[in-house]
Length: 489
Image (cartoon, rainbow, N blue to C red; front, side, top):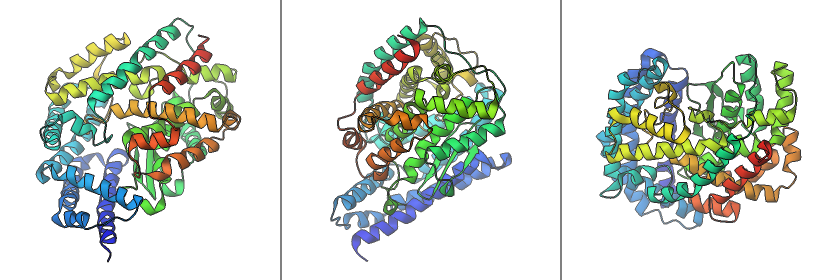
């Protein structure tokens, strides 16, 4: 067997085991019996031991050293595999397994704590998670910045210092736009009871419209919507609220953005390091552009208005223009996943600062709720009424996903760049969106971004697709134009 082919065979087995581990996580969040949580944690830890051993094995190092790549794809494959080997090799096997076990237990306990509003009872578990994350961060950093080491796992090449620069440039425009909108009459709410089975039926129609291949996926319900898997098995979840169908519809479209990215990667990259999204920032660019620039556009909202009237009857809004304002309602709120486009990145900036302090040891887990509530009052002018509306709302920290949050804001920035280029190439896009047909935009994104998987570095991929290096300016221009028109600013 040729040396590169031998490496590819080895990688595909390792990646297949990683997919199995992901499926265990999907099962845990959707259909696993409640009493199976502790056993599932042991199963996940055992599988992590096997995967970690393969990712750090001397035989793997030998295959990497002898691969002899001959073209750009092979060189990218070897580089991504080498990067994975280098990162995995810095983390002791017992630490990797213990973190996987504790994170699985923590996720389950978080669900119960969130349901009961019991932050105090959950804090000891969260303390364990944070301690293990700090240990892994220090091992990965090898004397460098611990938080940067975690961030690099989600957004290769990014640093906290660079993020601080980006957020400092983004924040003033968001705050100014929020202030201008606050002076205008508020957008309307939907009024009615929306049958949850009907919500799920329409959400499936939306998923199909946005290109989700259900022959290689499925839609289930979870406490916190997510997408899982790659290639031929990519699953999503959503959630329903009888008073707020937008929560279901736009969560579904968001997760479909993630899922179709994975489904549209070149088939020959399947079960390799190139066969997945290149970074979480790029992943979020797909989910956010599907959800916001496309599905929340006034043109598509007009089509959705008709679908909802047909399905649910009267819900207190009589025309498509008013409905578009309801879809894009701007108001400060407690929940990140329900935040409008103007406030969303402010949620992320807050979490970025808090998790950096946790990893640095500048903020104790016992003081996290007070720090959260104080910062939230300063940034949003609201008093957090309970931990479910505050520090317990997101799964990321309970699941050990430190360094992940900033990629949401990066995804919005990347989406702004892609949307500007997409609109330049597709000047008649609104006509298609008004007919409920986002296919022209989806085809553009598939060709420019999704098919490449992990072939290019994140910033390089966005630069190739948009025609310019990533910057926050297109996002701010889009928000000012869109909400200026909706609110008459």
